[in-house]
Image 1 (tube, rainbow, N blue to C red):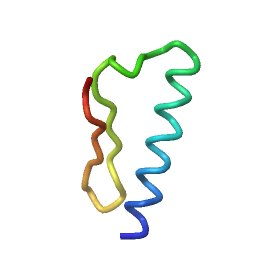
Image 2: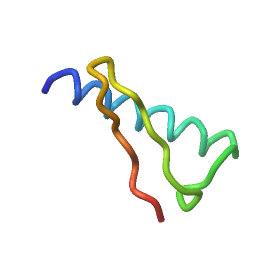
Image 3: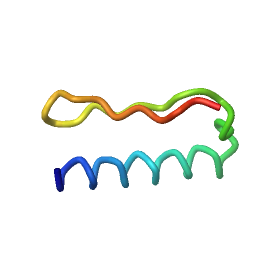
Image 4: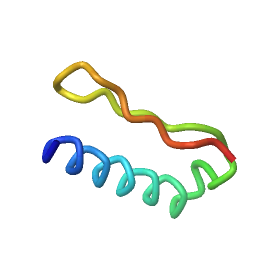
Length: 46
């Protein structure tokens, strides 16, 4: 569970970076991260 928390923080960090650089917007769809255990974390769209 601890790894998932870190993975979620990492996805949030990179999502913010993409928005700051104008490469996406908060309404631009989904972003996802494949975890080391094979699971995925996907942001909500819209």
